[in-house]
Image (cartoon, rainbow, N blue to C red; front, top):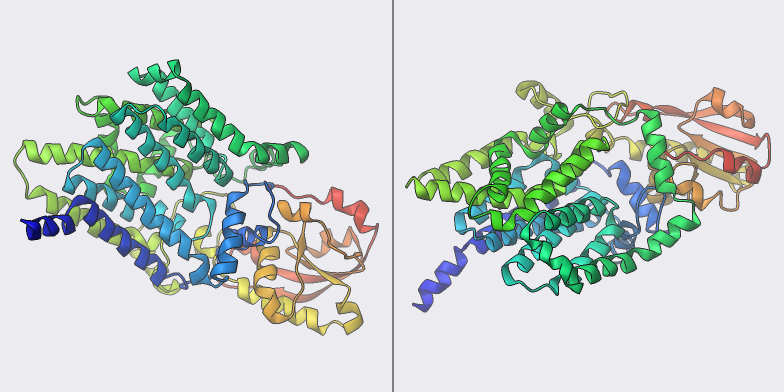
Length: 513
């Protein structure tokens, strides 16, 4: 009997989910070095050198995590991408826990985790070091707590919900969408009785208190994130999508083969006799969806909410197969989903050499969806933003070291976007380069260090624009990589002397977009 129980434990639902999670972790680590750093990774690691309660375009947590990673693991690609791989596995385990809390058996737990595993948007998000990597852990951790509250009636768990949501707000402001969705979901269901007790209100107070440092930081800096969002809308940088287009992109981002599962999950939560007990989460999803549609949110902003639908939908399929007595459909369903996941994986996980990838895209006729309106080269933006950085830093170093020593000592390196400045900061030391300055996002807040402006190497600007602020300017190098974003092809300019003191110029060159 004891041996049978051991065998069952190793073949249980949680065990299957753990095997899949471990496999996904190993997959991400195996390809951690297969392309270079992503543009945002440079910026997050630069923020880790300037710890604060907030930044122009993000809260504080990602910088704090980066600070820990750099000191414990280093800043190599495997080191930087280790925690994202852990987060990918953690998301799958949370999905299994949510499914189990809803009553899922072994097949449904495994199917829900498999849906997470094959979703293209997760494969990319979990491959790089960013807030998006950790966001689903906060959303789904809170979703699991909601289920526990419903299952056990323990209203004190709202305190844990508030604490987790408060930390989640330090990761990404979009935690507000999930919190608002839960609030409306509770209000629209019998769970509204929670409002008659203090615990849900105390949970909200916990979240607010935990988040207060960021609120104070924003007050001190005149809410730069709101200014940034206004600038982005005015610039038209984001690809505009109609509601039907938004839904179509959701299908591709989450993988077309998972569509029946998450649609079934939404129906199971809102309409089925078994699932209506947990319909708070169904309403939560719909509220977040409506908010994003009304606010023209990016297509991937909804991604952290899908694991709870995968969990619910997997239960729906489990019940369907058992009710109709077609147990054979379970392995067929799982196999087809896994194979379909393999087919689309190269679109979001850099498992192929670039030329092989380009040929593969032509073969299957599917590409990564566009998020921004920038002109593209051969690669989609998410992959193009992982190329050309080493070459840019090396070319900058060559121009820097050609300067006379007395000039070089006074020369600043100025990046017109945080990718350029961040790449100099991370990759430049091995080439003997100083830390960069810049006018983009929080780089502008960090200022111009001790430089006077008498000698500047300018990255990412035109001769005409530089001549408006520089007394003398000349091209001293050229940056080009066939696979990088076209706007990262530029001349390196040497600016000798500013037309006005740098302390007067700096407030006017702020670039938040």
